[in-house]
Image 1 (cartoon, helix red, strand yellow):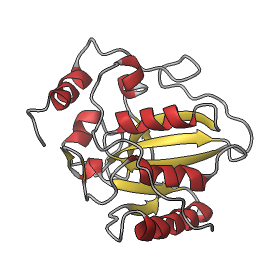
Image 2 (cartoon, rainbow, N blue to C red):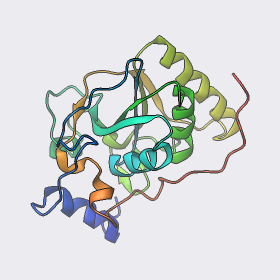
Image 3 (cartoon, helix red, strand yellow):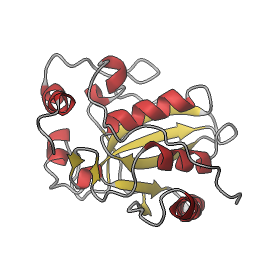
Image 4 (spheres, rainbow, N blue to C red):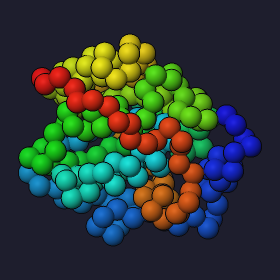
Length: 210
């Protein structure tokens, strides 16, 4: 990691500061879950520092089928991990985003194609200056259909966009743990806070149809 970067220093300092503002879910409760419409589905991805991942998904899909977005930890072997323990790299968890969406308005395929546009999936265990297994690129599927779509999209973007260099893991979704409340909506509550420089939308040609 490049400790001389001002943004990176703010990332180290802010999470453990008592002055960090609490992130609230859309229903107004810290860490609370709303009740979602029948038929809503979950999608879970990891693409580096979860602050920027949540921010870019919310910004792009707000009003377009996104019902909720939470940052948290998944893919590890420790119960109830903390941010500090995950950052140590010893728990095996990835910093991740879990969204709830309305499949009548946005498809899982669209969410996964967006995933491959908004980060660099070619760097193993790293995004920008952030290094470690907690920053790995991964898709955590919740059923057989999500696995099929994730693999199909990955195969297509491997050929059309990233030219055979993708390091993204595609694995079953294990136990999910919400991150601490101050991580939720972090960049909304802390304008100018650290955002990984690899988190931006790439301009790619349309993928072949399914």
